[in-house]
Length: 623
Image: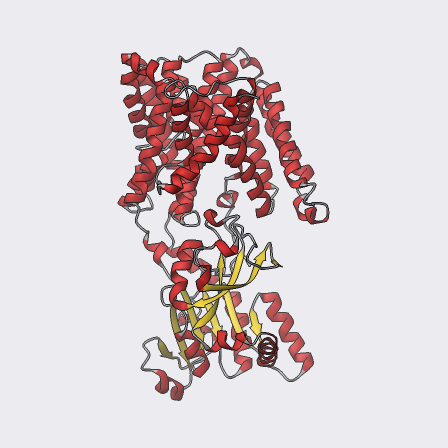
């Protein structure tokens, strides 16, 4: 063991602490670690000296980085749309933008590839950098990890703009990686066996087929002392990495495919968090810090040509992604197209991996490598900063969830009144003129003369995200609930009541099969009375200023945080946490995880702020 190892570990620990202490939110952690490595290396204090162990840890760091990058791909974006759409889905599809995120991403990145090739030719023609294939690969890369971090912080991963930028970034990592693998095979003299690279993909497919049901039965064998899910991940990583090296490919290709395989196996969120912890908590910082430690700024500054290359490479990274703007403009407004273009010019992850390979192949000098790295660091400073300054919500991002009530009475009107106007667009419909006259002073109450299904469809009453059936006639609620689900309404909530047990059983089954959320007055009253007896504060919760809310944890900064350490814990009372559809015990030491459903009570005035910090209100789309 060397003192350099201890210094790197301490530096990895210190970096996020310093960023948090000085509230540096625009600088990605990876870039900060490279800068710290430069400071601790020969460019600064010269206290880090690489040895065999550090080189090994750095290599495993880049392997794990590419593995986690493979796990970031959202394959649901590539799913084919349903050929048979419900009437409501057909209406929404007709109003939807003609260009999907997949199409926009393909157009944008294809144009960027063309620009990257032209820039590589220009550098060759000007005598600045003669290796055209290597320049093309470097100019076409995108830092997927940095882009994802920015999109997560802005809660955009589930929005069309975020999905599009994610796809562009995935292409910006996959395409250059494949090009690098083929390039290195030919340069190293193994071009005749380049077809063997496909064996890595075949092996990945076989592993997926063998373990495709592994995580569904994991609860039966996984224990705190075994961590079988993590052992499987390392088995897949090492198998594909070693196979990639054996057939003449780069080990990072095997790691990336391993990440794709594990993602397709659909592990639990807790498995993903543990792998993130191992990667970003242990191995990956070694790669970034040691990359910086290998750069000698003074040698770079001593070369006039290198001084010229740094701004030129930086400009090339930016110009190569310029055509992305034209692709993004197919769907998004001008300011967001520009913001997205700045974000995807961010590059560092694969640049570092590519330069490591290039140096091993001896096709690039240390000065040129250093210039590429410093230019990449500058791109990581510019990209997130410009995106955060320029980005504005798209009109479709600002749309509220529509809630339609059928049945206007004291209960439905009060329920509608208590829904948050910031989240819901509410309308109430009744066929009773008397009730309409009573509540017509409210602008969102409407009179309908006919509650037949064709009439309601014609008046667009079923064109909603949530339909609440509160009519006094339970049979009407029942029939309309089934019709609304058939029409394509995502959530239908209704009250049913029937004194005939056989008829009630039939209604229960049909509503359950259709996916309708229903309740009976008797069961609700009994459940409420039991809750009040067991928990007297329940009555205060229902009748007082506090209400019950459910929020999904999506902000990763809360992952692993104990409940008692939540910054707003004094303003809320967490009663339940559902994790992987199961309720877990709750106390002050309970650590929350990404994907947790928090059931909590709070005053409605503080919920908006809490939602912004944790997540949007759960819309029951996955629960």
